[in-house]
Image (spheres, rainbow, N blue to C red):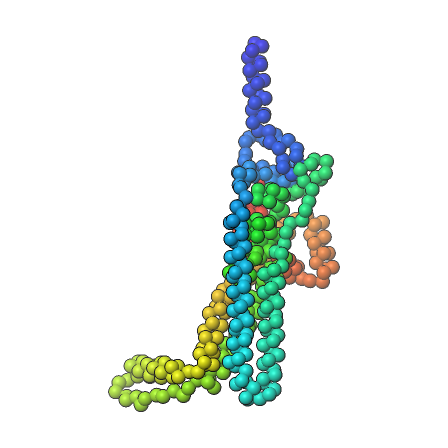
Length: 350
């Protein structure tokens, strides 16, 4: 009997030890009913994912290559913007000043304002930090208070706590609050809570500037383009064939006159095509960003509607203090995209 009881006690203790885990947030030993790789501490609220603890940090060569790639694209884009500004001034403004001094001065001021705004927002979005998580105390039970790390996870790359709605960027080598995406081909930086507003304003300023450049190149090209030489059309058919023959003749006349363009005319043609192509891509990106912001704002409204009346009253008083609408602060404080918000909601259910 003694041997059987000792065996039962041994099996019971071994089963308890197999489900005994330690919380990384407060250091308390937790006893789980069944083994689970993901669990949430009942004291500090930190979420432990044992499967992510096996990740290794990136090598130094990999991080340096990504940093060099980002800086290279930022330099190329900045040079392209300066080229468009200088080429537009050289090709367009002699024609504008030949019409009137007032028009010339007005368009010079307008160009200077658009150029300064675009480059300023670009530099702010590129070189401002995207938003790093605050440094908090963790790992010790007497120091970490009740729900002090609610829904926090542990970043295996940074080896420190990661707050909700934060993601680790392997290019920036840091966790970013409200990370939207890493943009290597435009700003060479992460789009997070600290620079999301600058990124949106940069996209808007680029769209306005490209529209202005396209309109001015069309106006200047109308004065620079050589006269079209149209042959006399012999009307031998009717219907769609006449329209097709007229269109062919116009295209042939444009192609033949394009061979006679000066250097100013060629620069104007390039600026027109470049502004249209860039504007199409930026409009698509801005639409995507606004769609994500709208989805994130809708999700936050659903979350706040289920909170207690005390917390809702505190948030409303905060927004009233800033004097801004509820939705405007959510947009400009960073709302993230819908996929990341769904990750947050799933983590709160653990």
